[in-house]
Amino acid sequence: MQDLPTVIASAISAIAAAVVAWVAVKAFYRFKSQKWWERQCDSYLKVLDALADADAYYDRELRATARQSDAPDEQIADLLEKARNADREIQKAIDLAELFISKEAHQRLVQYRMDINAAGRTTDEDGTQRNWTSHLIDTSEAIATCRADMIKIAKRDLGLPEESP
View 1 (cartoon, rainbow, N blue to C red):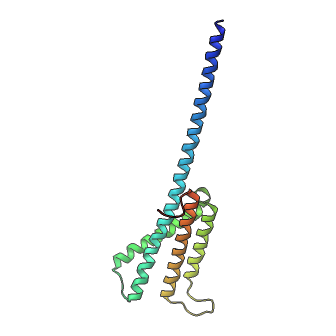
View 2: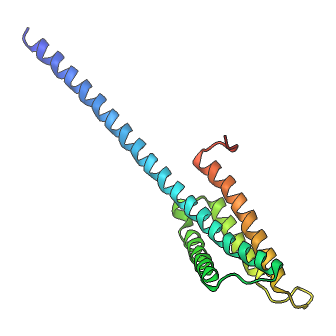
View 3: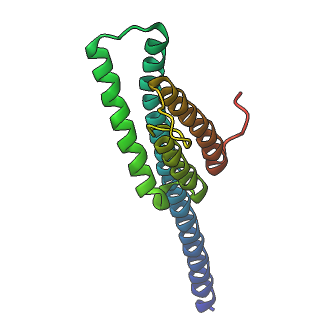
């Protein structure tokens, strides 16, 4: 008769151990999923921040061109450096895209690169010379549309509501 309580105690211990193991595994996967989400969110934020920096430079140049005035050299140098860093950050996101952002986001960044390259061309398709203002406008439009698209893609990929509160 003493064997029955020992068997019951062992069975209860085994069930308790199984429940604890199941809870630990579930917590581990939840932690892993949360860390992945945070890394993915960080990747999207870096891309959006880089697009904002690039936009600041081209917006400033476009406004200065419209006013036919020059910004202080220090300000232009600072904005240009941010734009170059932004370009590097976007290229890094394209290179590492398969790790942290969706295929759709990667494809949109590749399209952005093509749009920026097209905006930087010195002649139109008919061979006429393009001016600086056209370059600035086309580049600003490429940045703005990419940024809007990337926000939509990021919200969808991260499971955030489409509409802002």
